Length: 111
Image (cartoon, rainbow, N blue to C red; front, side, top):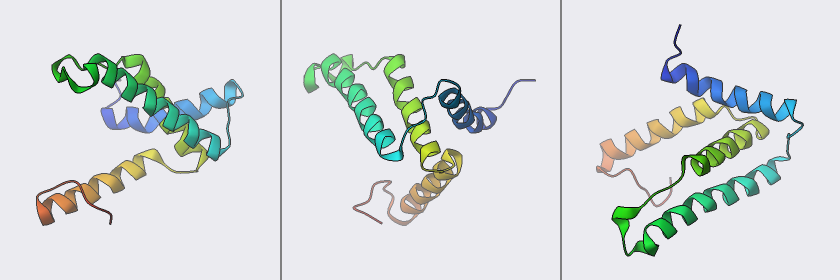
């Protein structure tokens, strides 16, 4: 039986949690947040460099490996904070949907 996208996304946080436990990689939430910022920074660095710092946006490229590192770090952060990543995503999607319906824009100054 093939897992649906929803099943896989729910399993991802559990997979990261098991991996961290197996390899003794559990971390304090503050460390996890700092690691997440560093990993997202590496994604941004890939993007900036590949797009020649904005001069060639059509050349933008980010490695799958760096995106994977950022996703791993995000899920490890959620786990360290006892946040269900799938529930957090659903909350976020509902927020964006409300904004789009109310204003036609997904972005907001702050809610």
